[in-house]
Length: 172
Image (cartoon, rainbow, N blue to C red; front, side, top):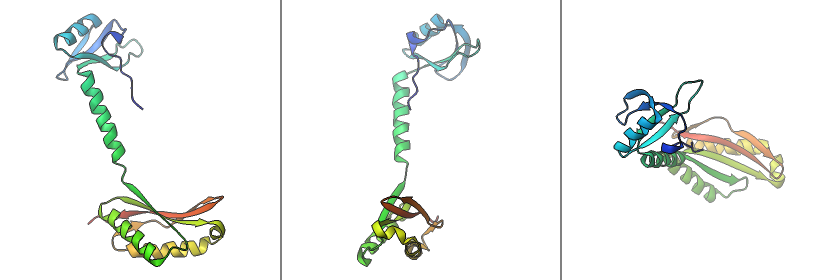
């Protein structure tokens, strides 16, 4: 969600609390004077906080385009900061395929990702939750030395049941 700011002539209040480009407070000034100061600096007058209960809005003199660019960059960086990977496998997975998945989990853990480890039970398998819990617990023992996890949880219903847990790399 991106916040909309009122800029320059979009501000309709007669008085504003002005913050100068260096961050210092100028205090309450008429809107026209604040806009003049911003134009002299070749910057924009941006309403940071709206007026409430007779208190004039807080406006800052700044480069609006630069501020919006920095916000979008920060938002993009926060989106990329989600370091969760998912590994799914079925109940009847072959030993070699399981070994490949375990190597992938170890690779993710070495990069300090959080790994969501999921055993998927489909069709008739979904009635074998006890055997599924035993199988996922045995498989989790491969990661004893490099990761920690909580006990697996059963979720789902309908067409498939998932037994999953989240692995976190040990801090070394």
